[in-house]
Image 1 (cartoon, rainbow, N blue to C red):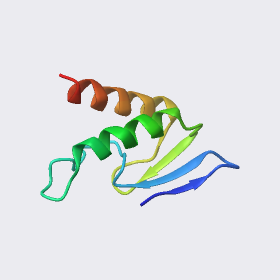
Image 2: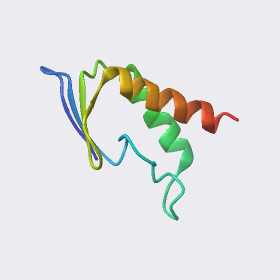
Image 3: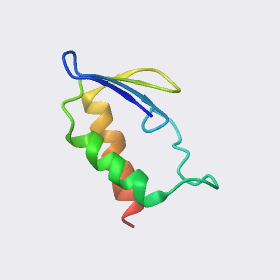
Image 4: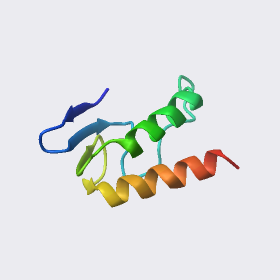
Length: 75
């Protein structure tokens, strides 16, 4: 679950996206849902991400993480 604050462009993303190894291969993970989420997050007008782990980051890093993940899953 995440929290989106559109007035400031702030996303509290929980485990959906953060600057670290994503837990998409756990027993209860659904890879197609992760792919869909990455595509959605990439298109949102996010300016700051506060993930459930690691340091916060801005839009450029969000796009980089999402693009890297999608490219990796597309192999």
